[in-house]
Length: 204
Image (cartoon, rainbow, N blue to C red; front, side):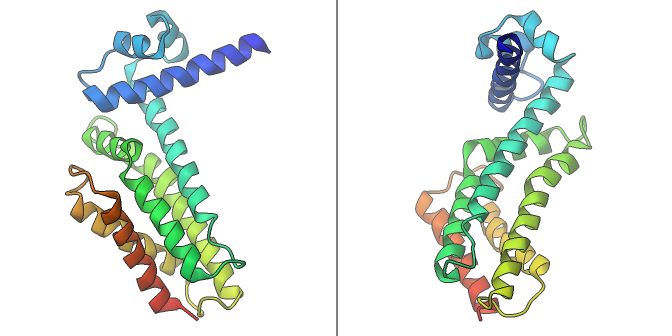
């Protein structure tokens, strides 16, 4: 059990180190020795877990996507029929917007788009884990508010899509597609505006 645990820990350390190095250096400039040094393991250990650099890159982005998705889903959990939508929707919107603008999310998007020609399937895979799961979870939460009478009758899938568009559209524009860091106050303002628009459109 200890040996298996150690192997899992090393794999996770390698994935975290790989994402850090790829984000810092880019795919082409990054090398396995640099990743091994970042992870605190020997270079052969990296190859024992991952066959080659391509495999490691895809695994590192997949792991980062899972972490981003988990944070997004945790933010959406704040939206419950027990809480007033006027409080829970802005709170969730702020958490989602801040997560969208953090280092990991920005690096994940940048790496995914930068390597589209080499890994064309990666965009679909990352999008399914991050945006896909988020839209589904958000629609589920909005549906509960509709059933509870806290939002008027609407298509929750469409409402979730519009909510996310109201968040990501302004964030991308103001950050110049992620190349400019936004102050937290500006991120929160965008989030609050998105939540207010949804409440005005669908509020009971």
